[in-house]
Image 1 (cartoon, rainbow, N blue to C red):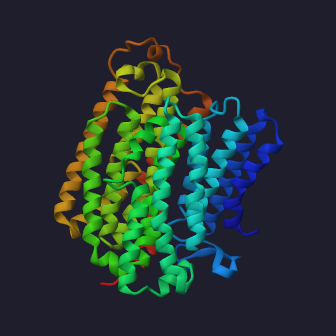
Image 2: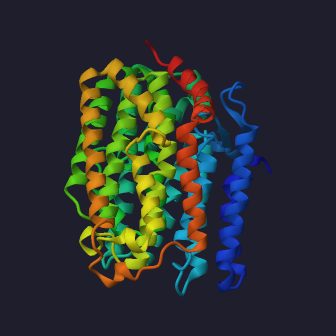
Image 3: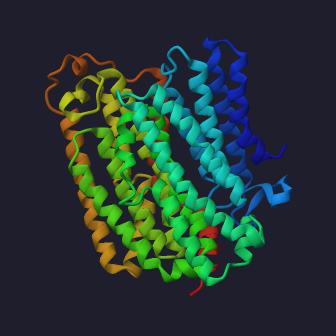
Length: 480
């Protein structure tokens, strides 16, 4: 079995293995599987050569030969870093849900491993139908994790709403893939070399913008995210907010497979990105729950990534992909730490907190560092990406660039206001004043998060140089 197949299928094998072990061993088996996945993901990164061919570690086997579908996996500079980033985030999610399984630990950890398998498949697949299978398969574990282990009374309704919305978004995606592949096949590399007719590209572009836009989420397709962030268990929220597969879909498929349409309608993508950015920033101001506030902050910053993508430049896509990677440690890490907070106090609403830094200084420090990374503080992992994006946006869309700066400033101020009210001041509730600070395994999550956030922020060159050649190849293929 080749490396990428082993990487994608190992979590699924681990999930199936859980049926054969005692319930008490489920966490250990899950942890061992995720550590093995991290090792394979790190190996894939080490084997990848940024100066080599664009797609590497490629493997291709007939899967549905009668339909021209192949089990085709590969990575390039736009996707390879997501493999170790995803593996680390899922390990953090495992720690955040260490006691989550309740009376069904094998089911809980099996679903988490199945979700990891589908997520890694999304980043590795270079056959449109295989990608779509992984895309839709990810909904199954998400539904059961949210419905069974959600933290609000109507979690089942939130789970059903999320899955129905995502299934609706899958229909235009499938139609776009079929339209593209009916004559030329479903291989990404083949389709990149043989662009479709302009009219076909227009149809495909709009379909994929709708399908991926629901997952990004772009405003006005964002309504599922705040409810999801409030209802889902913290581990699941961290994964969904930390891994922006919707934007990845726009980068990997929507723009490259419909380059003429993307060039013609770049203004539409820029407008949606700007609207999403500003709306998300204002949304942070309107909510008192830290989880919901960070969900709106992620909407704001994903709008920045989409706006950078709309420049159709190498610098713009390099910044967008780098920002998505930073989300895994900034947004994902913040949600993990907020889950630790919720487990101790029963709430993440600022009205139920206040003074939390007094009893939980380590947790408060971690939330602050992740939050500052999320708003692009210099010296943190998001700053290099946001700097690249702002330069690219101001060069192409001066007005939108100024609006982006304004929105980012609002989001930063709103986060600091939420943080101050939640963690400073007197602790008036016993659930806060008597709360325990981070445990040793949670300490490990905090140390890794801070090391990555500060390390990448101080020395971003290795990260950026992996993405740069693929970003340049991506931009060079677009018509001018």
